[in-house]
Image (tube, rainbow, N blue to C red):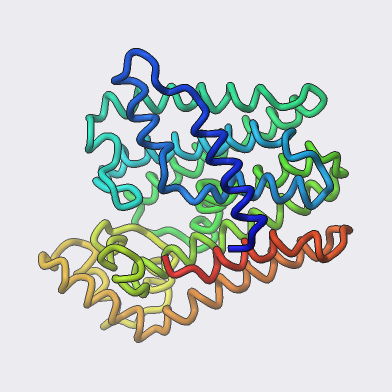
Length: 325
């Protein structure tokens, strides 16, 4: 990691560590401390700081809202784990599993209030546009989560619907972080929108890579057993394209697997993965990811600042796409 990225990450971590969470009742704040502790990569607030720096803004002006968006992100993870009944988060027990669902709900609510508190520390000159952007993003993330939940009971989901869902659930938050950085740096509306579009497309590419890693990532590097999305019957990009492209024999295997007629988890993963490989979806998913990646960098290229100022943001985005975990 370049020194500047390390420096900014450390600034973010120090700011978060300085937030007073040793408060009463401790049962409310301990899960917040646990959730915000070490483990997160701080990618979203890092994007905000890098965008601010790219447009020659003062980092101090973006730090609070950047952390606010990071707290909001962690709040969504805490509540998502309850909805998904996910026992692990970043290799550790999720909050609802370590404590209980009621605690995770209430501590999550506190985190949402804390996020707004940090957004409210944005310099007054930029507060309204940043707050408007944050509120819009919160609503869109909730819309994306609801679409994702709707997909669980739908027989068929289109690729277009899936891309829109991950745009809302995953991509608009990093995009908002970048745009917030541009806003407090005094960038024009046009350039703030260009960096938002860059972030949105990076976010979509990131999620497609996440879908790919769940099936085709190296288990030792990835840190967990592959095929979790298959076991959970999640309608990922790979799932949707498989049903779209499969022949009769392959469709039969997919239906047997995803209607839970295959009871052995390893057999289910093997059967679905075999169909994916037959359809070359391992390669096609990476090509689709690269399409969004190229689109993202096209927006970054249009921003009229010196190329050397874009370097760190370009490297960070590329690292997200090339990641193995």
